Image (tube, rainbow, N blue to C red; front, side, top):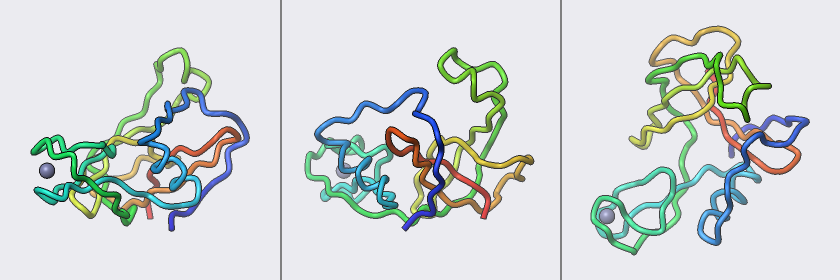
Length: 137
Ligand SMILES: [Zn+2]
């Protein structure tokens, strides 16, 4: 189960929840980080999808992720899209999860983490729902 952190405001750009993605968002709200794995070719996909983008199979199932990985790249955003302007400056990065997935995410760190720093995914519990971010371990 992921660590979580309360944030006393609403999400600047809340994700659109669909009948399919609600499994991800409801799981995230209770500390589970999960995605889909193809029954045909066994490959993982992130973000989760109702079909496999590698072999186009529609046989996919939900599987848990460890929420652990390593920082592949990062930067600080100073000039943000209007909707995120109040949050600047903020750090974003690319994380290689232990399961072999490469994901883009907000990075929570006051100082610049070195590349390959071990990170964990945490749940950000906003007033209107969850988001996730990575932080150094
Ligand atoms: Zn597949």
